[in-house]
Image (cartoon, rainbow, N blue to C red; front, side, top):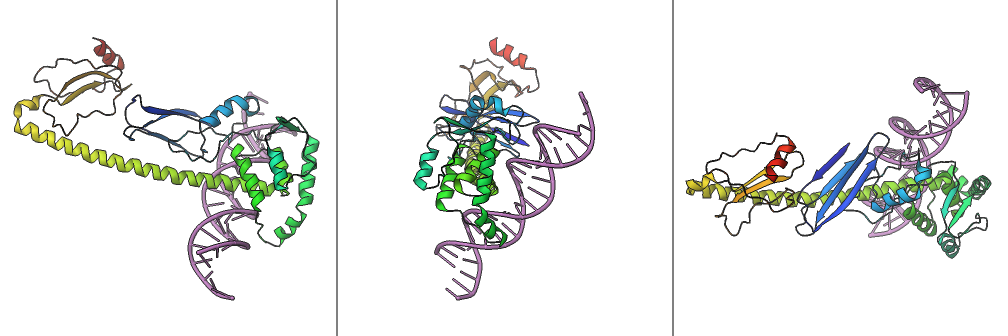
Length: 327
DNA sequence: CTTCCATCCTCACTTACCTCA
DNA sequence: GGTGAGGTAAGTGAGGATGGA
């Protein structure tokens, strides 16, 4: 399921967010606009079973994981950057159980671990930039983590609930910021480093993703509520303006023949081919209605007949509108 | 090449435990 | 000390992807 919504014009003050969702069945692209001036313009898209990402994650995806991601784009869906984005995670997709060697970002993981007193001396060696864990390392990690979790196993069997320590949670959090999903090797390495069972690391990431999604949903909800409120207000204002115009027309029958604003719009690309006269008697307190159309250049004024009936040929071909715009 | 099946992974939903006011 | 609410670790089942037979 996908829902797309777009309002407003493409003024220069608009800020643009590109979004793209992709799964095995289809690919979606879109653009979200926000307008700093009136705060009304927005675009949103909702996709089923998609995680929230951002532009950065898309770039990471394209740059870093082209090779390892081939054929494994499941559950690594790229999703749209919503206008309101929680500053929670850069969702760099991580390939799932590929045969490729594990790439562990060198960063300052080890140093932070040492600070936390969590680093064990068996961590695979490698360059500062990238460490490659061999299959032996993974197996060793599995053994170590299973050994280390013997005491956890007891509490596990007794049904007691393990509470992760502050340090463990913080380190998991730190890793989650880098990648919200783990491949098996990363999972094992984390489990080994934190003295946990791999299953515990896996569950922690699952629950963490769920919490992120929940939070994002709350933020989206709040945002949509605000948008709804402003649209309601806009609707109310336009209704009022319409009533005033009708009142004006009934008091001055001659003006009734003049359309307040006559736009001929291509229904396909929604470009305005021509704009006509604007009612000069519009009260100063009510600015002329100007919304939703993408006006590329200064609209040409076409001299409509005085008694031209209001007729908007919405079902003509796009070429018709473009021709009449240039003529 | 297609189909079937086992396996793995993630997600959504839920339960159960823990902590705190 | 008892209690309810909220947070969170963990269980469960469904669905999708993948690889091998």
